Length: 165
Image (cartoon, rainbow, N blue to C red; front, side, top):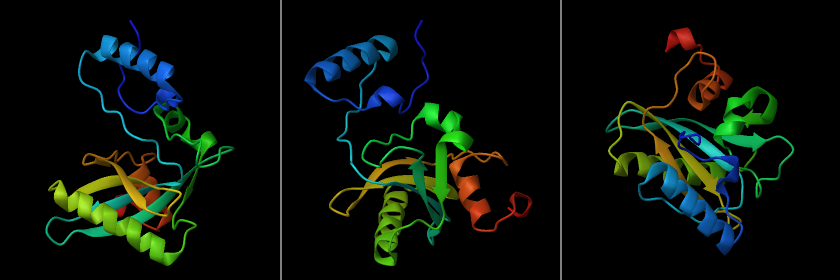
């Protein structure tokens, strides 16, 4: 049986109608449930840590760079995440100007609040060629391993010690 692990994979980016049809047929055969198909946003990817409930706030913004790949071709896939130490460079704070950071934070906070999240979540966003931040997904149960996981890496790069959480 094929790998049943869900999520974004290296082969998730579809380049034409024929590959869309083949991939759709394959995924329906594996999972037997509806699929989500979305437009690929060409541009850098960010993850935003958000904490709190009513008075939610941004913990931090981290840019995700796949080594050796331009942002328009990068896919932060399960395969890449498994080898994050060799394949990913994390930038916290990100290499973008302050007004764009604020826009990314606003999209993250609006998404967090609209989905009625609480305590802690990680919001994934890509900034398109038009400099607009686009919501990708929210992770209301982000990985909290003391070694890896985007939220933990972000907090560590901001000077937080895991034991102090």
